[in-house]
Amino acid sequence: MDGITLLPREEVLKLKLVVNELFLSIQGESTFAGYPCAFIRLTGCNLRCRWCDTTYAFSEGKLLPIEAIINQIQKFNIPLVEVTGGEPLLQKNTLHLLRLLCDLGYQVLLETSGSLSIRHVDPRVHRIVDLKCPSSGESEKNLLANLDWLGERDELKFVIGNNEDYQWAKTKLNEEKERLTKVRAITFSPVFGELEPRILSEWILADRLNVRLGLQIHKYIWHPEARGV
Ligand SMILES: C[S@@+](CC[C@H](N)C(=O)[O-])C[C@H]1O[C@@H](n2cnc3c(N)ncnc32)[C@H](O)[C@@H]1O
Ligand SMILES: Nc1nc2[nH]cc(C(=O)O)c2c(=O)[nH]1
Ligand code: SF4
Ligand SMILES: [Mg+2]
Image (cartoon, rainbow, N blue to C red; front, top):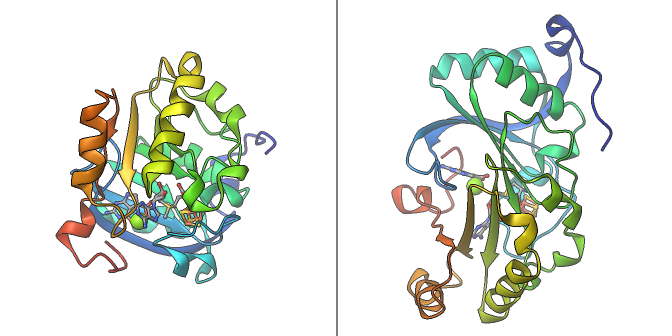
């Protein structure tokens, strides 16, 4: 992904993005879990993770000007915003949206698959980057160069479906430990409904692994398949 040309705000507001949903919820993931958060879910994804819980965002969406997105986010009237998807970095205008949200004073989170470069994402954004484990079927698409760009505001997430994924993730952490010294958190999150949180917790404890167990808490608050939460 090339860097963006810095455009004046009035031009950025006219740029368009295909948006799947805009909603207010309790942040369910990352070290920001538990806080009220506004969500911008963008449409389209370049991956097809076997266990994806958001397949509806692969194609459903509406082309909106960034101005309309910002107007709705402002109506939610809270300081935390997350841009997610689908894969948000698939749309080139997302970089402009992220920069404008930061300029407007929001605390901005980005959920991204790790298959596209985070290099040109505004450094004020907290980047929450997946490394896809083998059971996703997409671990070949991991762009390991992204690990060079992870800093203290960023988080790395492994979604664990089985013990093979767990061992793979442990090996990756060991192989890449030099590049992960600064990251804010490393999260191991169980594939919802496939791997019991208790089992993953016991693996982590047995290995005294210095990682954060992540649960998608919104799926315990509302129905796990509910949209817009
Ligand atoms: C829906 S994805 C959208 C952002 C981006 N495409 C990505 O994969 O990071 C948001 C997060 O939900 C996680 N996720 C998706 N389906 C899941 C599931 N069934 N169980 C646990 N986490 C899941 C993804 O791994 C990712 O960390
Ligand atoms: N409440 C809530 N928190 C989330 N954190 C990351 C999400 C995502 O789908 O990227 C998500 C989501 O879908 N809902
Ligand atoms: S990259 Fe994210 S949105 Fe795309 S299939 Fe995987 S989990 Fe779903
Ligand atoms: Mg989700």
